[in-house]
Length: 209
Image (cartoon, rainbow, N blue to C red; front, side, top):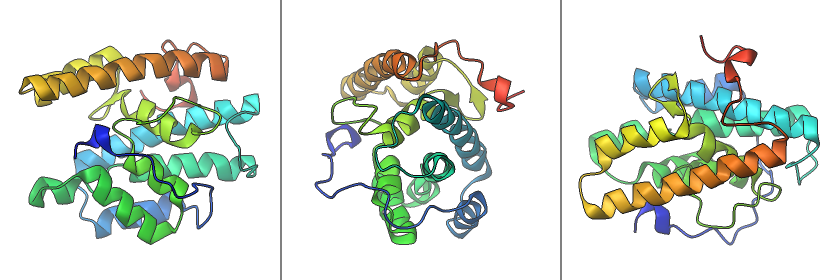
C-alpha cells in the first residue's frame, strides 16, 4: 500500500493524550537516532506549521476541540517536529516512514491527532476541510514548503521531489497528484487564514534568514 492509499483512521482524532514540548520532541529525535539533516528539515517544517497555527488562532478557526490557543499551536508544532520521526529508521531498514513514525508518535504521546499529522504528512486521503482537519493539513503544507533545510515555494519543492523520486511513471503520477493537492491546499489556506500564503513572508516571524 502506498502512502497515498492509506485511508483515514476510523478512530476519533480529538486532542487527547499529551502535547509534547519541543524539548521532549528533540529527546525523541535523539532516541530514534535522527540524522542531522532530518532534524534541520523537521525544525523548519515545525516553524512553518507553527506560523500557520498562529494565523488560525488569530482568525479563530481550525481549533475544533476548543483547546487554549497556546496548546493548539503547540500540538501543530509538535506534529511538525515529529513528522519525520521514522525516516532515519526507514533509510537504514526500509519501510514506510510515515506509518512507522505515526506508530511511534502514538505510543509516545497517546495523542491520535498528532499521530495523524505524522501519518498523513505526505498526502491527505480525505476532503481538504481545514476547519475539521487543520493539524494534518498544516503539516502537509509546511512539509511541502521546506526543501531539506530551506524555505521554498511549492513548485520548487515538487521539482526537487520529482528529480529525486520520480523514477518511473507510477511514482511521477503520485508526485503530480500530491503537487496538485498542495496547490489547492495553498489556495484554501489563503482563504481560511485571510493571508496570501503563497507570498506570505514566513521569515517575518524569524523562521528563516
